[in-house]
Image (cartoon, rainbow, N blue to C red; front, side, top):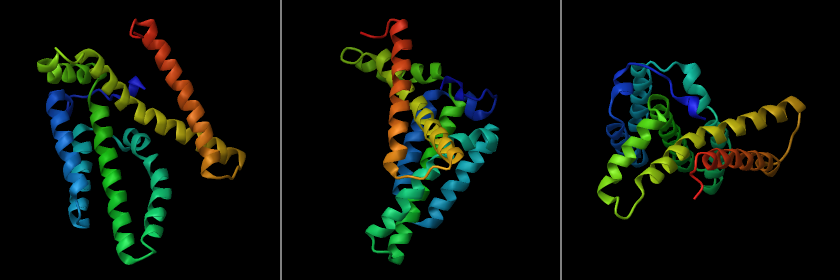
Length: 202
């Protein structure tokens, strides 16, 4: 989970984590507001360019982005069915899929170019004016764990799907969800034990 960071000397690696968080927040808003396929395509090209600038190879990016395609495999048809299979429904589903793909790619890029320590320091800096009411260290740790656990859950989904394919198993979404939830709970227990061992259980 902690090993997702890819060391490098690119501009993105060297940029202050606070600045990267701010740019990520603005970029997410712009992606969410994209209502034109051409605009969304332009944003996708920009993200690809950022990956190239950061020197992140496809072999490192794919494990972080690829699992979202399994979610889209279910979400897109549902969106089309809700719209009764109309052309507008397909457009809406395509935009939804594109937004989600670009957003995940951006979040993965932040994860791949930013250390956990940098994330903690960024949130401590941002929350410093509110230290009277908020424990900046704990909030920073919570955010860092959240960022790192998203790819962890995606990896669990991938491993469960690989295991099902290896057995030639077929089943419903529930048959997929149960082992994913169980393994996620085990992973959460392991993380909790690690935090407790470091005196962060109170």
